Image (tube, rainbow over the protein chains, first blue to last red):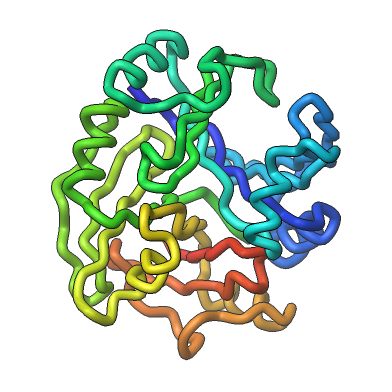
Length: 134
Length: 134
């Protein structure tokens, strides 16, 4: 069911400093920052050839990244996103097996303009998993 | 400098249960477990097409995964591994910029039989980064 790794998301407390770190120190190909207020983040995309790394900084008071950074003030690995062909079929298979989908269980349109869902990390050994229909 | 994402490593408290979860619930292509006592882990590899997910369970008392699981008993995202062409050149560039390499600073042979280094997460916004020469 799960397909390619679409991206790994890292939460960072200071996106400008993170861009400098990844571009200058790690020599990576980093995009310009994009504010996504409807997702509560400002994001940069790092193209590493076979997948993407996304650096997320909280945007707005209700940002879901904010509680993570309160627990991990230096930042850290936030989630992994796998591609699926059919997000409704994937959700139904997962919930039938007892796994929980975050929120109201309905896919919403993610940062790439495609339907996404997040799975409860308690059901996946502490890893926050995003599914994106491609 | 950093190249492709070689793998994402997730620490798990129970590898047999993790295999069931990833194979049966998430429908992933999971390898047989391999004990790597010299690395203090038992590992399974999940081929997601464009990269790998590695599930790590502690093996032996001195396992470096063990303190992570003491802090995160359910498991969690442990590290990301980027490929580099020349690990000595990468190390020298990173240390010249002030970044710290874990251990004695010398590459050792990693789980795939290739030279690896780990970078200090405090220098990379809380993310533990492995570099592997390919």
